[in-house]
Image (cartoon, rainbow, N blue to C red; front, side, top):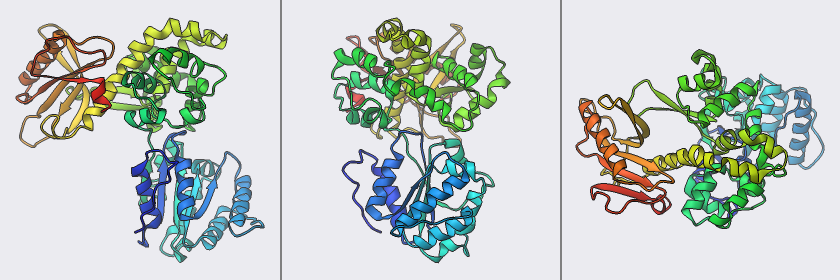
Length: 479
């Protein structure tokens, strides 16, 4: 199998590049179909275009058009592959047969495939026919990569009784850069500034390159000005991007209910009942919007670490959280060209509803990726959890609960209980809450004999913190 060096202009993406090269150069005759998906702006096309340039092949980018228009463009692109002229195809069956005749042994990439399948619903079945043992794709060694940003559509290509189920040798999801890679991509060395920027733009590469033309905050002192001249600036594409992310999902029709659901989650109403109550609906009425948002990977449902049957919904895209918590409430001011006033009025909300929860999520991500030395062994699961305190008639929220792998016949071991605070100095009071939670979990049957209490502090720690408590500072998260 060939080793093809990743081009220098492709930032990070080592694992994705290795998987694509492995697929494109595999000697196996059974490697025929790959699926590449991911939300828009993650660099999928950039990555696949770089791959084609390295290994050769045919690249076709679909657009939102009729079947006739798509076939015409496809015929022109395929003819250009052979040196000129044009092909006129009556249907996709004819087009695919010619495709695998023109590119019998190379790589074929069809980008934004959902546009084609929307105009031609039978296309996945025709591809299945071509890939069958007696299909015309088998006359050579061509490999086909289907790529798309409509995650609901791409997810259904291989699901259930879909025609292409069981045909793919590669299923690659191109995700946003993780928080540490994002800091490097934005050229930010200050961990505190890195968290603030990531809590708005996340790890989407295009937001720096195309959307703000490389404008990154130079320091903490420049952060407020940067917000005003980029994400709150109506002349910058990032300003309306959160709204477009919803509009681009083909399964979303009436966006009002979806914005209402997202707004409820961004406001801290993370349970299904809390979301329904916040928007004035009954819980069954929001089942469909929640499912669509999950399928689109705009939200994720995470089970409570300690309460079975209780799940919390979290928004996956930081820019949507920022829009729902900050921009949507200040939209009138922003539309009138008053970003400075809008930001002054919402900065406290930004810190509490956006940065605070985002910092907690970063702490969970860091903990999940930690090595075995952190808690004596690799974490089996990391999640937020709720511990009921009947005596005090309250609930203890655990921001970072680390559980060991389940072992049959043994109580579930709790490796660590952690609390994360972004803008408050952590004190012994936070530690006592964690001790109380540990004692309550022991009564409930959990094994807490080796539980490490951990404080994740964005603003530092009180002097004289107990020696048996692990302290994780911002520098540790970015080390």
